[in-house]
Image (tube, rainbow, N blue to C red; front, side):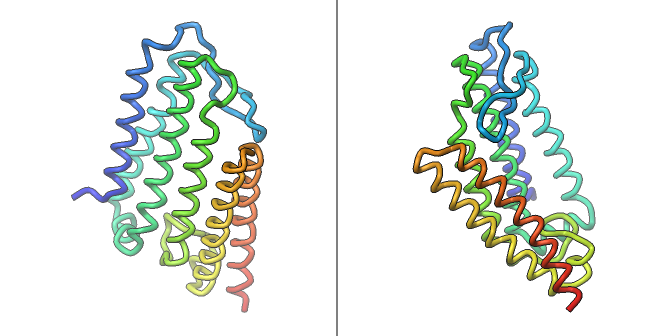
Length: 215
């Protein structure tokens, strides 16, 4: 029986492919479509019609195949069994983010907008996924796939627990801060909050893991 993470991956990938098929006839063949935006929400990379339609669905398909391969490995089966909530949040959350970005790109292409018209919805999805991950990370057991995985945390359960608790709390606070910025009408500040929160979470969690192991 497939795990919900695998089911969500297949569903999201299929949804992205279907969206591309439906959008194909509504996009100008010569259109230059914004595909990447900087921290200020301004487009800094454009692509043609086919790349815009196929890039993210293709990436999602490859990621789905990777997930299926990992899920069937010995280490993957063990991680999925020991950490079902984190496994689901990590994989399903990632696919939700990719799907939301793809839908926003298609909407921009159809409406012929250069600004990221779907910026706020995408950021809201990212923030909610972070809150979801933040709630399950503190309960995650040591494993090679999900959580704060460094030499220090994998070698010491205490370091693992401390690092992942801090990362979880930081993820939740970062997600809530980003949502607050979005509700107040400041998506650019939400981007900056997300970037800063993720950087701080990664660096401090790694440092905490090392210090805890040395004690």
